[in-house]
Amino acid sequence: AQRVTQPEKLLSVFKGAPVELKCNYSYSGSPELFWYVQYSRQRLQLLLRHISRESIKGFTADLNKGETSFHLKKPFAQEEDSAMYYCALRGQAGTALIFGKGTTLSVSS
Amino acid sequence: EAGVTQSPTHLIKTRGQQATLRCSPISGHTSVYWYQQALGLGLQFLLWYDEGEERNRGNFPPRFSGRQFPNYSSELNVNALELEDSALYLCASTDLRVDTQYFGPGTRLTVL
Image (cartoon, rainbow over all chains, first blue to last red):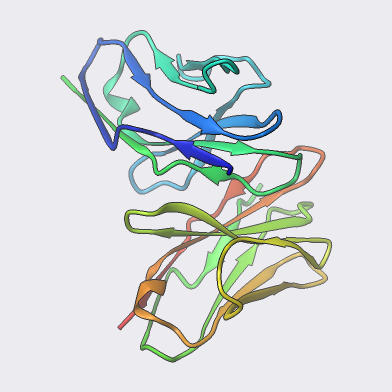
């Protein structure tokens, strides 16, 4: 079965601390993995995708096929990073996204 | 460039009624996806339309249906509303060349 698991509903860290938002997936094949973010009162937006292998707003994510994980990391959290983060996977191009249930990141000073 | 738009912002219905939600994709995008974001369940895929045809549907009953118009805008219809249909309904559009889904602000449906 295709599934995305985000084990933490809430992650609270202090400003400047490292952040790791966990994402594990189940998929028979080679999926494409994404991280989406939803800031307060804003729409859901793409943060990054594994095929791009880029860093956005200081966040990176590496696809680990052996562990079927795609954890999102940032070395130094900022208050403006506070948001809901969703991990998602997609099989074939153009097909629908399968989302995890999301993790709320709260960064306090 | 205007983003994905959805209407109405909020919709209140009673059990058994029908709801119609609308989505306008980004100009040039031919694919529209509908997702349901219910409390505690996360985002779940409902329907996918591309070039006017339904390409796939998620694990939802047939009373969830929709269509895509020649201008690529889309409608989601929910018949015989049940209390558990209360949720935020999100629409996303993409151009398969760009291959990134852009989301609208959602329609909040409340069933009383």
